[in-house]
Length: 68
Image 1: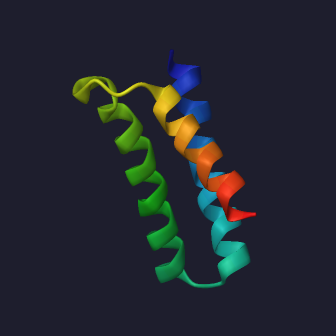
Image 2: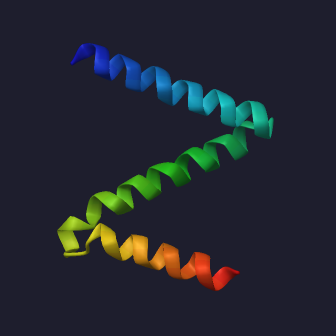
């Protein structure tokens, strides 16, 4: 379990580093990291409110098809 947590922490740090290297700004990096946390948090609340992940997939497909 300790190795899993260690790998997860290293992966998160590498993702933050790559975002910073592309954006070249700490403020923009922080904003993008917070957005990712919000997205994961949203999916954690899906089961609590009775939503299915299939709804998110359907909405994504509708947006992708409608966008073109």
